[in-house]
Figure 1 (tube, each protein chain N blue to C red):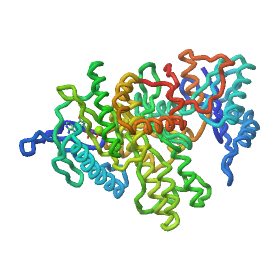
Figure 2 (cartoon, helix red, strand yellow):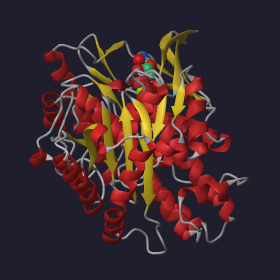
Figure 3 (cartoon, rainbow over the protein chains, first blue to last red):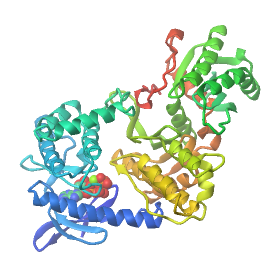
Figure 4 (cartoon, each protein chain N blue to C red):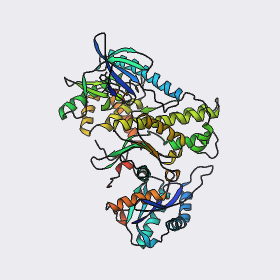
Length: 199
Length: 325
Ligand SMILES: Nc1ncnc2c1ncn2[C@@H]1O[C@H](COP(=O)(O)OP(=O)(O)OP(=O)(O)O)[C@@H](O)[C@H]1O
Ligand SMILES: [Mg+2]
């Protein structure tokens, strides 16, 4: 198996499973964390990722299909896509529009992604967006968890990209409540003086 | 050029002297917190009483008089209003009397920059951890050079979280260092672990740990609280380092005095073949030398601020500061 990526948490290998282009995601042991806690985190994140990515896939969303899961490994279908980084303006707007739609659908069933940034998105040849990395996702998410997804995206894209995202995210009926929560989180102080948006 | 730096953002009044990046003096007096926690007006009164003495001591350590000083820096914020104003007034008065340029310094940037200077690293990922703050930062060039906050606490700072736990566990003194002592030899109990991307929250962890005190060995609760909180910080730092492609890890601020946090970050860095650095404790505690250090950088890059614009800002964020060096 060939290693194709090193995430912050996991090594990603490419492979073929029953003729399907697949990737194996294997979480690394973080030797700096107390072993009992580290093992808890590794197993719990793998379990959550498999379960929630599987659920999102069943909803027909653009996420990898779950092929098999072990204690700290997941086999999933390989997305033929590129990172968002450096996409031309129009393609980026399309991607952000897709991101808003996918997040709206996830939020409508109470799923928060937990790390909703462009680093966890890929764009395929047709320009469609795929969402990956459900390791920090939660089911039965609180409104604050949902608002955190939006906040993480807002902080990691430009104002124009964020408004493209909002346009489609706002089509989901529950979005206004989440956005209200987001506004109150931003007022809570930590973010109010962040006057300087860099990206 | 010899620069005098004055720090008074919280319970410490400090004065330091720096000359060409060399630290010549670092004097301080602390307000001792008793029972009730910190009373801002009492601390400010004490700072006012200590100011002249501490500044004189710093000059003596540097073997200098005010005539040798060519610029003055003071902490503009973030911090506690009444405390900040004492340092600002002392700095302004001295600057006016001796006709010296005055430089308002961001407290967090000062902790970061003195640590980066001592580390010899160029562009590391930074974990800044103090009572009220917990942030992961790194230098970014656009739209101008500044420290970008990659992740931070959504609620309380890790220092305040440890202090609160220490109070609930009736530790004396009610500080993080007492939690560390209690934690020695503890066993791990499961606790809530909340990292969202590169951000994190501590209130859920604190509430849970305080509740667990009722039915568990205090030692185990303290151990697990500390391991969980520091692992959250280390993971967020690791993520930011990889995503932002930074080289090297530094930690600074009051909680950087914790040896467990340092050893965790050092192991994290080692796993990626990266260097780790933490400054001696005197620079992680609040101090005047770091203010002098940054003021000298500002002076060298021509960043003088008119006296009238030398104010304090309790919520002065590190990511709003333009770095001209
Ligand atoms: N199903 C997939 N198809 C194609 N590429 C993938 C797939 N899953 C992961 N990758 C690649 O591997 C990289 C890391 O994956 P992922 O984000 O799941 O790992 P991680 O370690 O959890 O990430 P992080 O760095 O966000 O913690 C992705 O950015 C992507 O390039
Ligand atoms: Mg990822």
